[in-house]
Image (cartoon, rainbow, N blue to C red):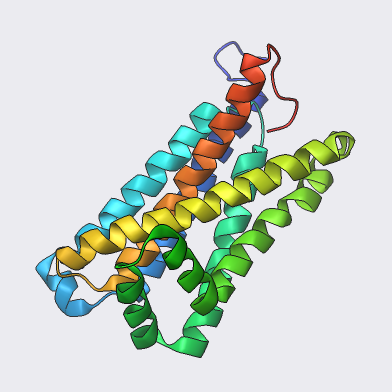
Length: 229
């Protein structure tokens, strides 16, 4: 092999570490652009919401790659985050079709004034598709990993435990991000729906980062690296 040619696993790692975040950021951008308010966009307010969300999601994906480096292919957290994003977006289509943008916007404005638990309850009651889709997407990571990596079947219990922890942190992040960002955007004169969704995307990404960091930190304190994460 030519000494100037990088090893194959480095090429695959670089590709997966850049392609997957690029897809996720693109999906977030398309979603927020599709629900934009043209008048606010002209004033630059909605554009700021979109750009802040994209930057936060991209930084979260970069942090996830740093916390959980992968020599080749996609890491399990990237697979789970990608499937969770996909399920969340499919659920959003379901919720939007049943409630409509105007009602969802009113819901987001209402939840911004609530506490964390009340807001979580309201979101899960009126946005069931988004939450069910995110959780279902995370669960699909288990059979997906078994197809991509045969050895993962040996650590199925550990995978389930980590999957549930990651799903829980993503759910917490979705609600916390939605509360914080929707409040900020409402005070800036923005529509509540874009702020809530932007906060959910950011919170979900950083919830995964925090979950993986805690998981790997726990094993580091025990003196041994995690076998799956």
